[in-house]
Amino acid sequence: MAPVGINHLCVAVCLTAVIITCNLPVSFGDQALDCCLEVGKHPIPKQILNGYREQVKGEGCNISAVVFSTWKGKYLCTPSNSDWVNELKNWVDKLLLQCKKNGFKGKRCQAMKSKLA
Image (tube, rainbow, N blue to C red; front, side):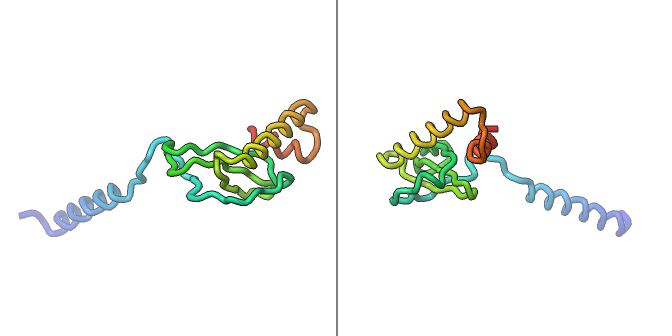
């Protein structure tokens, strides 16, 4: 018969192994972590925007959307197939082009440059 201390040690080691195994983080590969769950229907003032990205349905998110970023660090979800959204995207693209041409001089362009890095 094994000493009582060894039995307790075996139980403790096995229990620890089970706990560690159960608490391992689960990886979902390239699945997006931040997705828009719904979109706003009201136009956004262009002066508050400094960038955008496209969210594509089926690439880790349930809906397609355009996610605009603001100067205050907020993210606004908009429908991807709307005329006013396309106008805002064009405005941001033109602003970015102007900033590239002038070497990202000025406060507004510096903020856009930091988003590109």
